[in-house]
Image (tube, rainbow over all chains, first blue to last red; front, side, top):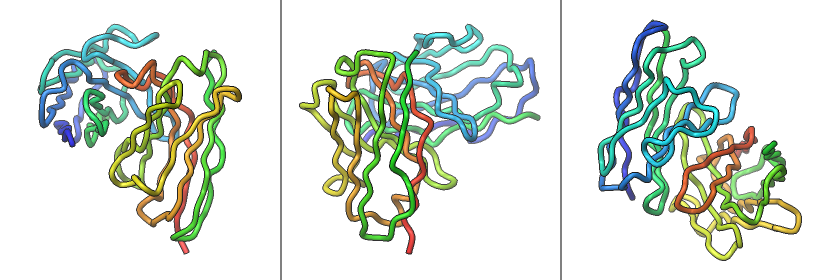
Length: 107
Length: 119
């Protein structure tokens, strides 16, 4: 199984600040990596696929980078609606695996 | 508009069975792989199972292999998850989600449905 490790576990930031979330894969997953945003009581929402491609209707303040084992999700300037939990997921190898999540909270 | 409507959750005793369903609309169902993902109490997302658009390929997490069966009826645009021999650790909110294929991310999700395994 490909273990996905996210850091930090929690990120405390203010609106307008830049957020950088990290995801490390236990083995190379190429660019078969997605990022999701999850808010309480809502369905998860795809943000990024293919490590760096924004999903439909995702604002350009969200960007993804990386390949192989190291990936980053950057939110350039946090808005109030961005405070949520973010998960990375690899779909390169079975079983698909998610990271444990990074909570972005208001400072 | 893509819609994924889920049904079938509830309370079941350990060792019991439950069948989850989701009905899809707004897209050509057979052209998409489908998957189940769950979130236990206070935990993160866990992939459970996935199936190809034509239903010929399916995959399972080790934690559910041999107990859960994923299936689809492309004539009715429905996806199902038959869950047998349920355990307390299967208690979770279960999400049904769509993927363009089995080498792609999950681009649309249902709202989720709660399954509680308890005596």
